Image 1 (cartoon, one colour):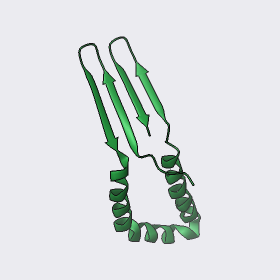
Image 2 (spheres, rainbow, N blue to C red; image 1 turned 30 degrees about the vertical axis):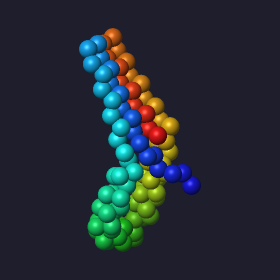
Image 3 (cartoon, one colour; image 1 turned 60 degrees about the horizontal axis):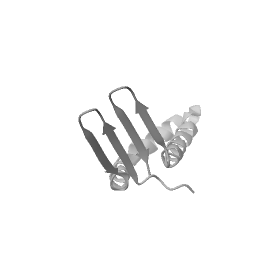
Length: 92
């Protein structure tokens, strides 16, 4: 099983300044779980209502795929440059 990413490192460089920021994603996961727990009755009702038409099963698969996509973001690196600025994003 894949683990979710823990940190995002964001760096912005321009001609006259440098800026770096570490964003701890492991602090956002408990917040997301609380929101999921609060919204779980609504999600369950929506799945039960949509189940006869076949969309309920698709909704369950979408939730599983979204978690898999979030977990597979580890080691993602984005580097965007132009003449004056450079933006570097790394997911750890």
